[in-house]
Image (tube, one colour):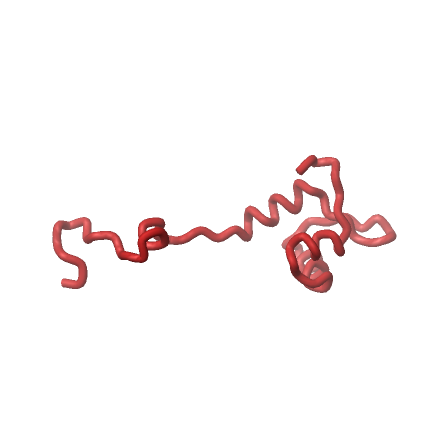
Length: 81
């Protein structure tokens, strides 16, 4: 997203499919950086990208996530022994 673009609380809530109250809570708790311009909060595109990157999750074990199986034991022993 371009860094000079700003979003309202409502726009961010719709984009993330959460309530406006949740977005305001993230702002109040310091999780989502925003500026108060008098008519309401504005969230910069770059700040939103940073927030999303910090809250992204990835599988702990890529092998298990793609195959559903645990990786083989690395010391040459069978798993489960």
